[in-house]
Image 1 (cartoon, helix red, strand yellow):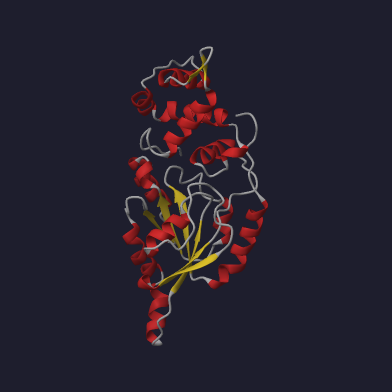
Image 2 (image 1 turned 135 degrees about the horizontal axis):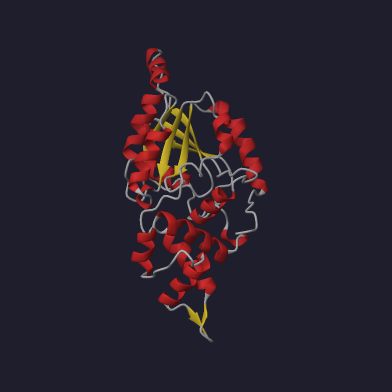
Length: 281
């Protein structure tokens, strides 16, 4: 993809400003990262923004990610200030570990409350990039559909408090925020492939070829198993794209490949985990 990927609509500027304004209201931060790209899906401005706040890091959508990579990144991201838990809201994996982790992180504050005979909820801000699964996590954690969740970026536009009395927690759902300019376009391509950037602003054929370029290097066996195609080093990513299209029978009149349909299927199958458990980072 030669054209630089840039997506930073006006509401993200407002959202970041509101996050900064609301930060003094919370006791801790719950940062969500996509397990399929744990490094690329971390907003670089968050590190400084949340400095000094106890932080719980959740790796989301783990059922779609390479399990070996998930374990590796859990260990990599752990530090004295951060706890890291892999979760998957579709299967429920790891979600039950979140409440105990919150209590462990906030043990001193909870002890102070208890000493004064107070029973106050822990207030946690839930943050992450677009389409990382913040609202889905909140709904799963709360056991009810309290936050609006859809599988596309930019659904949550305003901060909203979600009380979870059973867990002794109040969650502040925030809009997904990307950063203003992607210095590394490889990161941008990964985020676009994950669905963190609106499909409407991207060339889906170029994005699909970029995705194939990554997968043919890191997960060639999964591509072969899914699409029953073979390729050589001389084949370009678009050559591979066309081979998959012809194998699937995505052909228009005149024996031309239906590029649009092929791109839509490739991206949909990757995002749905049909190609396999994959981590792009």
